[in-house]
Amino acid sequence: MFEYWPAPAKLNLMLRIVGRRSDGYHQLQTVFQFLDIGDQIGFRIREDGRICRVSELSDVAEELDLVIRSAKLLQETCRTPLGVDIDLHKILPMGAGLGGGSSDAATTLVVLNRLWNAEQSVDQLAQLGLTLGADVPVFVRGRSAWGEGVGEKLEPIELPCPCYLVLVPPCHVSTAKIFSDPHLTRNSPRIKIRDFLAGSVQNDCLSVVCRLYPSVCDAMEWLSHYSVPRLTGTGAAVFAPFEDEATANRVQQLVPAQYQSFVASGVNTSPLGCG
Image (cartoon, rainbow, N blue to C red):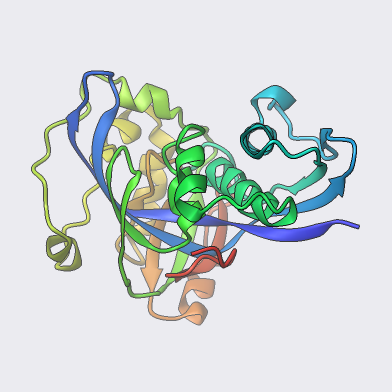
């Protein structure tokens, strides 16, 4: 029998690019907040050591699937003879900046660490996760956070938890394409947490994303009639806070048909409960 666990979405409430390392990776300042919505992943332990994906993920080969890669990484690290069947119920759209793949990987690490009795600490799991993707550690740690470095240097932060309306335009944003664009701002001045809390919420990727993906710009413009919209990560999803769920739901009823949309609440502790 499968045990099902959540892999929650995240929003980047702010994203500043403050430099670039010698290896080409960008140095960031960002704020992560979880949402009470996300994918669901089922796990069923195997005795034969095999790691099997029992659900199809369109356009993602099994060897590139972050869920499979994270399971194999943990298996190799802890040298367990056990395996697992994995059933991924994908809800979050890919290429939307909602952290779906990274969250799936983190849930796999955290849950299999328990089910396999692998005895890896949270710090060890976060370090393993970083080899899979820069956003994986925040999902492993399970707390809303101020992030620096490539996003792996995390400081827990308590945030207001409004209801958000999230719009997903009909495009798949390539993070690599955004970060390689010559017009991307790469020298924003660093700010403090207090500056963010006082209203400094810019996303340095926004202008590049809007130029390369006009449908994101259109979604921002539409949502601006009802609240103050922002871009999460490199997109494509845009979001805006509302005072209550009823108001967010009313606006969602007006969303043009070309956009996927959902209403979700911000939360400071991951629904996975790993922090």
